[in-house]
Amino acid sequence: MLVALAMLVVVASFAGSRGGALACLAALACGGTMLGVWLASRIQRRRLRIVRQIPSFLDGIVRLVTLGNSVPAAFQSALLTTEEPLRSCLDHVSRMLRGGVEIDRAMMHIAKIYRTEEFELVGSVLRLSVKYGGRADVMLERMAVFMRDLEQAERELTAMSSETRLSAFVLVMLPIGIGSFVVMTNPKYLHGMWNDPSGRTLLMVAFLLQLGGSVWLYRMARLR
Image (cartoon, rainbow, N blue to C red; front, side):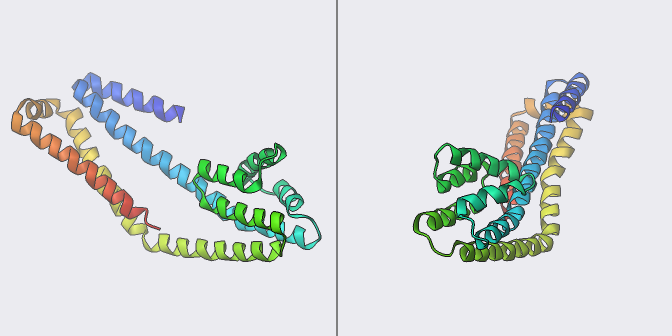
């Protein structure tokens, strides 16, 4: 992250030395957009890894409950064999449980932090089994099967829409890249447009169209 920010500052400084303040701003806008896309992609990949680990974690709880462990004890024991990144999320839950927080509230808390609704569902099932009893192992097993089926459907949808998402990314980044290149190589062209009333209007309209199109393409590409 620090390396990416340093590279962005270097590129913006170089563009500013070649084309002035507008070139520097264009480089910052282009680089900031690319950095934001990269960060969003990393966050999404981490969230997907967490969601894909939840069924295996539930299977561990089911095995321990079947052997005669209570649900809280099974939760703590299954936590010990869980790998990252789910392990760090569940460690947070474990600390909250030791502090006296109910399991559904703890799971809802990390669900808001990681924007993962599956944690809320798991917490609700665990709380029902602890408070009212019943076959917690059966409910958790069915939930694990449901989450695996949902994951398989999402993977198929992602595979079918990969070309659409790639096209959306190219359409968003192409105007930004071309505009930044023009500003850095020929800053007088942009200065002339900005100093002309009609040119300034065209630039503002282009910016609004680019912004609206980027939001629309992003929402279309992230449909799940």
